[in-house]
Structure formats: structure tokens, C-alpha cells
Length: 107
Length: 86
Image 1 (tube, rainbow over the protein chains, first blue to last red):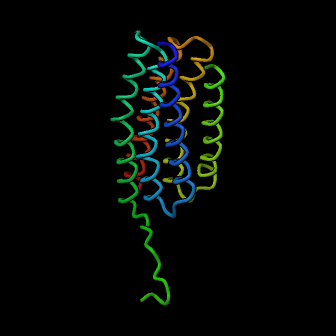
Image 2 (tube, chains in turn red, brown):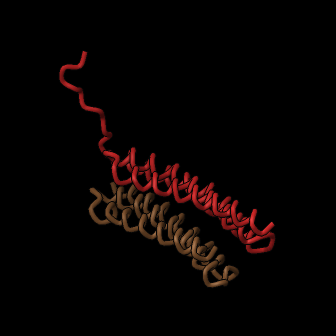
Image 3 (tube, one colour):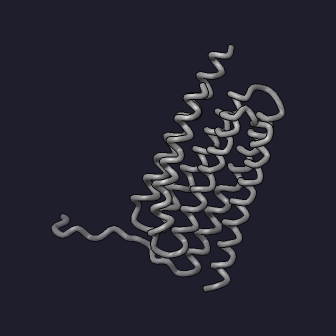
């Protein structure tokens, strides 16, 4: 039982780390503000939820794991809300939207 | 399991260092706010893992709740402020 619990927690944590890494690469590599938010908003939400579920599984069935799952529910609601708020502020302040440049010699 | 937790925490710390590039050099204040929000979410996970390493999860989980709330409220407040400032 202990072994299954540890393996499940490890798998969830590794998945969370993978999505953290993809969100970070998107935040570093994408060309403008809105595309960066597109990467980090969704990737970080999924990664935080996966990591918290993994830690709750490792903690077992007690008050602490209930609190950790409550944090997961809260982050699942709050992260898209804050992403939406900051991107709306960016739109209203008139940030430039990145567009793909026309390639020369395009058929 | 403790070694695995330590490895995961160190990996997330490395990702925080990568995000700090965007915080320092990011063009404009909006990129910095988005990057700081990303750093806050990573710090939440690091705090919980540190709690598991020290065998004091019941204390660290409350700190983690407060950190999540402050991250959310700070991001929304900065967004409202920037919207008023334009």
C-alpha cells in the first residue's frame, strides 16, 4: 500500500515538473506578452494542480491532505482569473499584438 | 522518498531562476507581473515540499494557503492599478 502511494505521488509530481518546465520555456521563448500569458496561464495551472494532488496522495488521508486539495481547488479558480485580469489590463493599455511576418517568396 | 522530494524541489528552484530572467529583463511592466505570478506559484509548491522534508507539513500548509491568496490578490490589484493608470 505504501509503495503504491509513493509511486502515484512520484508520477503526479513528475508530471507537474514537466508542465512547469514547458510553461517556463514558453514564458522565455514566446515573442510577445499575450503569447507568453497563453503559455504560462494554462501550463502553470495544470502543473500546480498535478503537484498538489501528488503531495496530497503522499500525505495520506488526514486534515493536511484536505487542506492541500483545497489549495488545489483555489488555484484552479484563481490562476485563470488573475491571468484574465492582467491580460485585460494589457489590452486596455494598448500593448502591441505580435503578428507573423510575411515570408518573401511565399507562393 | 525524501531524496526524490529534494530533487523535485531543486528542479523547481532551477526553473524559478530561469523565470527570473523574464522578471529582470522583460520589456515593460506587464511581462514582469506575469513572470512574478509564475514565480509565486512555483514557490507554493517549494514551500509544501520543504514542509514534507522537515516533517512539519501541518504548519507549512497554512503558510502555503496564505501564499496562494497573497499571490492572487497581488496580481489582481496590480492589474487594476495598471488599468487605472493608462
